[in-house]
Length: 321
Image (cartoon, rainbow, N blue to C red; front, side, top):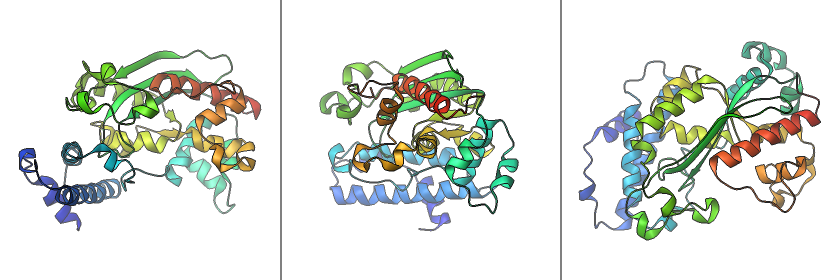
């Protein structure tokens, strides 16, 4: 599939009833075409200053794909790895994140590290950190942003300073199609969210008030998330206006998992089986979570834990301004 074919595929009229009763191989073929087209359109949008389509075309195609995924057993999709879920933020994003944390220009940071093969530790640990940031976390029904739904989002705003208090703490549950009343909420074994939690809630893609509120918050300060590439990928395919604001530099993601790996020396010596850069393991080492406690896997609770752990790590490394 080339770009013109992707635009044509995304522009075709979609009638869900046409796909009811079709075999899984046919549905899988259509899903794979959708997901390939989404990837091509997203890459074109990122790299072309003036793409020949509006990003709403990508959001609509992702919605179509979710409708197809609802026609198959969710368990059959669980092990699929999406090409539209980024494994990490880009090097440019990292430079921008460091600049935001240290209140410097990205160009200055880039110039300092050019030619010196700087490690992540040098980048994040080179200057003191200060300022106010948004923390955010989402819970979803899938690892793939073009296949599942956001069922919980939580955020708060906090200054990176010892003893800082959070402001604007918000937690919102988001609804699902009615069929999940029977089948249950996918990934419930991870986040613990049940049908009862979301039964009377608007789906994220239909909640325009939540979308506007969230977009405004994400533009207000750089945002921090543990494995921010996950939130970034999901917002790209679920939150109207996010892709455009991200491209324009009005939204800056910061990956706290990257900070953990860069600054905490214990990560390098711990067994990978312990997932040393996970929020739970990191928080236990920094004392923001008791050794016998577990990460809650709810948006606001994990956001608050993330903020407290980041501040504890920065304090440990004498990096709080």
